[in-house]
Length: 444
Image (cartoon, rainbow, N blue to C red; front, side, top):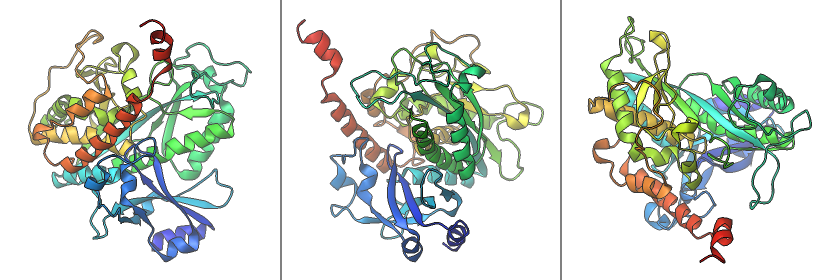
């Protein structure tokens, strides 16, 4: 707390946002006056971690946490403290770790899940490095959820109506928004890099610089709310739905990942002469084997499964290949020290802690079990057999059979995650859609 207190005094902070990510990766927590924050450790009910995307609690709440819904102890991570650029008062935001009243890391915390995976790597003398690529859409303000979403007006006064993949001039249609976004990111020291226009109308991608997985997960967590506030300031919405518009591509969070040997400091995936190591092959094989089981961590919502189609750069296969964007696991062309694997499964609607944890945990299980991958795929994989679940219901069924995955991600957390998502699925299935009324009302 001494480090944090010095930072708060340096920036003349009045209020502090105490942030925790729930199962969906949504921001939960409290806004506390700075003197109260310094004086005592904040607490939150542990049931908060079992909330569904709609804010309800899952049916197994009393079985997964204490029936009394005890308070968790929150501990601020000083590395995560940042300014809140859009706040009118001098406000700080800081991510907190969750602990039980007995002082143990809380098993329901998605941030703790990722920390556990990283600890397993460290025990093997390895350190993971990642770089996320975050896609999103800008959309016209729409307060009527029954209406389809549309692209916002650009600086030309026209709504984007055609696709502009990698179009530079298309970015300048939203120059004021981009300036606001970069201003907010700079104030928070978010490690964002290249911005590009994606294939969808008013769809963009921003790349994060490679680094520590926990730090990058924190940054994506903070970036998502930053982006929404930057868009609102310019009179539009930003959305992280996986598939917000039927006629447009989905939005992903591709995760580039590599491993560093802690003893030598070298890339564990490749030798100095460019040969891929056994660790690289085992890691790839782990991704191939465990992705179908953990696909709900990459695609956590009913809408997520609308994104998967080989023809729109969202994989449904389990192939890997060298510099091949049609496969699920791409190995970009790079120097030996930069050898990495790009996991293209995760949607941007995922909880970044869980998506990154799932990818790293799958590779780790492949290493531990010395699995072997398929041969690298050459050519276009668009006609490959679908190997993953095509619905949230099937994806959640796959979580019941983790086999030899072990304790890398605990069975208790997986059970709790599945319970929350089953409740969300039940809520979704209780809604009668406009399509049903339009096509079934008079025709059946």
